[in-house]
Length: 217
Ligand SMILES: [Ca+2]
Ligand SMILES: [Ca+2]
Image (cartoon, rainbow, N blue to C red):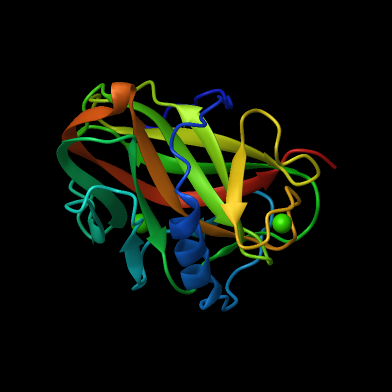
């Protein structure tokens, strides 16, 4: 079941990668700026049906995993799975390392959505972040609260990206050339899940069908 959730941004400063790792992370992604699809209204841009190189963000717990797996609720469909073990830590995150899909090429405000399944995670998951990177390898993180941890089924989660004011609403960025400007195009990097009180019992989140829609003329 897909359930619409009002997009909301929240302030989350607590899980920025450390500077040294930021450089490693963005340098890695910069090696894979190969083209892919362009954004059109309400386009589904990534369905996780093709092979992708994936990488756990270095600040995540060492037993964190990211993989493309078969959808347990729809055999034949493939989804992105981010999973982790119980530990103390602020967050876990996983990235796409090659063929990163191009989300936004033109200035404007956009709604990026994904279908997300929280069945296998606990209520210790506080927020979910979408990470994108720009042409100068600056990574932007857009965060929304998680309201369906442990609930069965799929939910539509939405993040708002305004390319003219990317640093509003608690959005944070880091990278090699941080200027708080969305130097287009923006490409999809990955997802991060943050934990209440910097502690988690472990769990998994499934993602599928990243789509984008322009929300202003
Ligand atoms: Ca899929
Ligand atoms: Ca920039």
